[in-house]
Image (cartoon, one colour):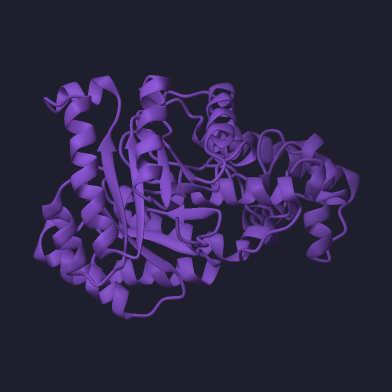
Length: 376
């Protein structure tokens, strides 16, 4: 195996992310996403699928010619034809996907005899034409352990540089991931493993972090968790989770908000209000108990400081607001409230929030105050 360094996160927003139904990135958008991934410090991205046609090949060529400060990887099926198309892009790293579970082999009308014969042909060709060869074990999470071990043994014999263990339908749970990577790292101590998790059960981030703790060298990610069905491991979530676990990061986390916002726009997939790390409500506080505490120390009700990921802290006002937050807001406006006025404002805020089922802003509070002043 060749020596290589790709970093902890291999981003596949341009490949697996774009496979989400209805998502199409223009060349300009792909270049912008690359620039933003580079600003974060990503070391490797999976850029696309050459077999999609001439336009995709030209796009991959253009991305390659920009000279970004990260490694590029093409995704291919296990065919010589796909590898020949990948060669046209100029990208010297390739990920070749092989079906390994019984259900996937059967769906393709193939068996393990076909698998091993194809591995020999395809991996021999790949090693002769590419500087770096990764292999994707598609649906590895549903592959019999003995069959998966044989598959990896053969990959290792062919000099494969990295193996992607794919939880293709997102069915794994953290303890299963721990057991799998404990086994893999023990049985194959010299092999580099990547974990490719899907989020069908909402466990992609947790599973990816467990994989990193128990032997995976890297994990696949997409910005905003973009991808088929329930998506992939969100880059922003796993990156912050690892930062909290390790207490430091080699990545520019403050650039996360920018790229997440951009990909949301380019993919026409708005970020949900309560989305971890980047959702609008993650750093907004309303209830009286919480706002009183965060005005003293934000970390009482936040896992981390919002500036870490380029976000802003905010207090909003509504049905659950208390006196501390409202008084504090008016102090920032150099307005000292008498207790009777404060209580009138609180009552009005609660009433308006209940009627509209929306939060109120600071500007709303100033309008309430101005209206009440006429009655005093």
